[in-house]
Image 1 (cartoon, rainbow, N blue to C red):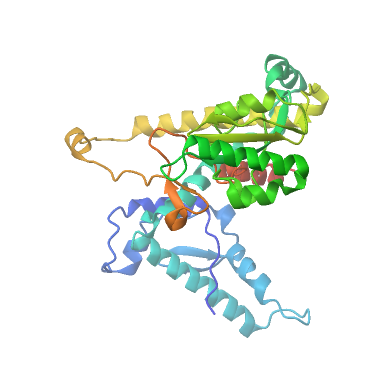
Image 2: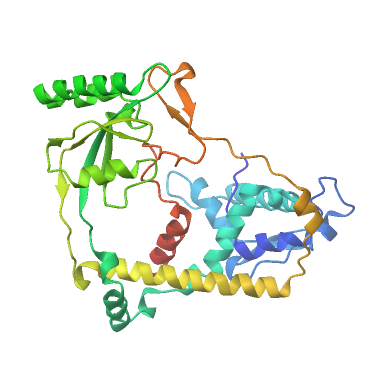
Length: 359
């Protein structure tokens, strides 16, 4: 069974020397392989074999041997060691062939290589001990407001869209009926939202979650403003906004909380490290840019028209096809299932991995 293992960055990045991306074999495997820069000896260990002049070392052997260790705890036999070494050689052969074919041009591989490069040139060069307590305290004092937990309200919304099939009067009548039901039994809100609301959050019972006064994408500002005028447990009167009649419920409120430096020291450190990462990344990119020959075909750029992005849709109960496009110019609603997704997840993951290795 062929087992793949992770190649180290210096070896992988050197594959850019191929450039052509051709999948046709070249004459002389050894001559092609020598275009790949050999990895540092520190990433090889003891050289056990070579493939087209490139080393297969004890570190790669050990990585594979961990999976093949005899279950009875005895030492590897000669035959078992030969099998592990052969697996490592096969890995090297496949790696070199992938590089020769230009497999590094694959978008996913490019992304991995970029992240590895930034980790080596940026993340691994920033350490917790680089930031003295005095620096952290000064940063906190200068950005204190950013570490405050703002006042927030939990918002639930019913939205009755005005359409050719339902005019404003009909929408207002439906809203009034639903308010009467809620006053009689507030526990009905979730079911009412699922069955009658045209809000994109209806599928999770109309709960928009907690939000501060800035609101969140896809939530009309009128809804946010109304919610902050209400007491916890209150039900709003119907009001017109975003092309329909709205009813807002505020189940709970959270007051503003100011936090101390000692409470936020870890967050301050992460913020300062992130700023340093950004600074070093820009410097590294500028260094590469200044050394590169970059040519832009202005005519080609001007004449190229990329395909327009698909317009987001909003699921509306009872709508034909189950969804309707978001009107042009309107903010696309946040997918409730992904609203808490972190757009910087990859960078933060690399940061966490780098921090673990520093400990």
